Image 1 (cartoon, rainbow, N blue to C red):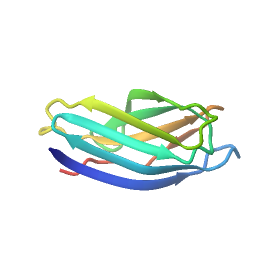
Image 2 (cartoon, rainbow, N blue to C red):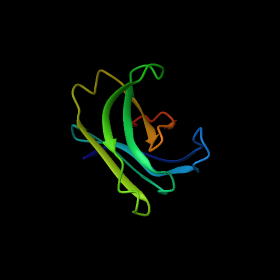
Image 3 (cartoon, rainbow, N blue to C red):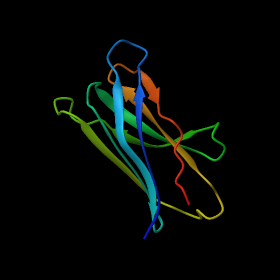
Image 4 (cartoon, rainbow, N blue to C red):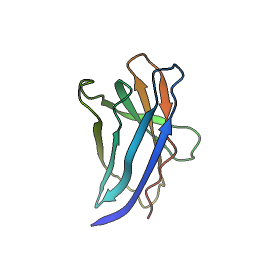
Length: 116
């Protein structure tokens, strides 16, 4: 049973002039006791890895997972992160993604909240 779903589209400009990364079809939802975050990019900026970050207050975020970047020779990238949820009824979590490019630039997405 799907509990919540949010989908957004985001654009970000890295610090260096390597191009713009477009995060497409960014979705976050809970399915039974599992959190699923999936997203895609336009593949124009080489991805080293993504940080999946979580917070309880929208201010202080902790990295809970790293998702490695895809082969840079592919056009466009698709990613997914899944996690077993514990005690989601008492704690409200907020999530965001941090893109780390091949040259070390970091780009942070907007804050995501699974709707209940």
